[in-house]
Length: 566
Image (cartoon, rainbow, N blue to C red):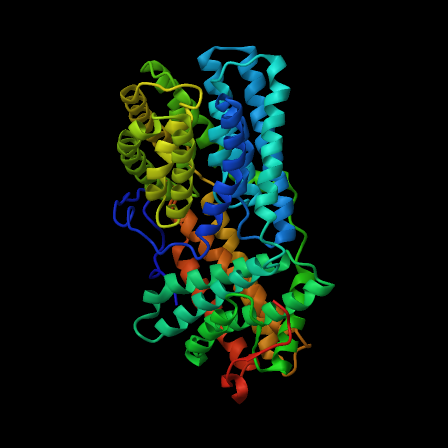
């Protein structure tokens, strides 16, 4: 039950493939939410500035408005906190950029500060797992602000505009809460059920290795659902909904551990029932549910507190170093070529860096293809946008919607809309020569992607192998704990379920860590044989634990609903 056959190691040099890099995926189930939120957050400030004849200030309001792109997958209480921190982070980065711009016009200094800001933003976004769009939007705003002439006296007013737009973006992000207060957690649970159903349906149609990606996707969806549910209160009115959804997530975990004993259609029926505002389905096995929720509580009680932020930043040092070096070199290269906007190259480099070099390579290809196609789209749109400032604003809003609607299909497709939108924003202060803008953007894109990727090759992540060793050890310990409880004739209530959940978490972390390390280049050989053996034995133990707990003939009963309000 592994994704690879046992080997003693992997080659330190890996081929960077183009296969599948531009392939389109199915759109996100909530693709329209960030798209509509973006338009709702950007439109009022821009239209107000248009009415006042001050579109030249739109960059500052957009800094706050674009915060509405974040946290759409989080429960509303957690979303409120996340959006507040994003707005504060955006204003903080903007403040540093504006102060720097007011103190110096030395382009080399500005690029250096922009690269350092990009590295800090990348590390903080990854450490806090703020989610898409991550650091890219923050870096785009702060890097662009570095190259806008400023005086110290103007800065408070500009920051006030960004803060006001940020407050409006927070309101837009929280607006659906009164209508569907449990929408995010219901969607996360439905995604876990559908992913588990996909694996259970595929199981038995081929070799186990063929279904490893589906199993990994299922466990990732389950972990995402748990993270969403654990952000809800453990007591009070919302706790009832949380417990009802927890039972369904446990059923998804059981399906992943014992797919042969699972009815995929039942999982899909539960997932479908979670759409909209209907009642939450119940699983139809109250005694087993009680034991499983006891196990959840026991596992959560035994879970150590999350490490402080500074400890989470430590493993991200190689990624931060890649970002700082790549952004700085990309900006310097753009300056050397005489390009007037080196921050475009800087932002291109900042957008490349992913969890490993293989993913960074894929993003580089997607970025270049999307930006160059976007430059061509700008050539078609510019004549219309230049007919008047109102049309300029409307074109930007349409492209804003298109970018968020398409980016879940593939990053390059969203970039086709992001690029002309960014070019049109530069014209809010005055129309510019279309040919010059297109040339500069195309050159900066290629320079930023090439130099940024070379920096990623130079700065290797040598800690990846160590983290794989640690993940294997953690998975082995979790399996041994579950095996000891399986050997007992009557383990304590909830103990076996807690051990099973702990093992599922450890195996999910192991697969994610191994995939991340395998995507690095020039790394030392990974303990692939240990990874494979740990996964095989771990999943067998999971299946045994499920069969021990979940052999009940009434589990195939029809879908019922629980008296829990949506």
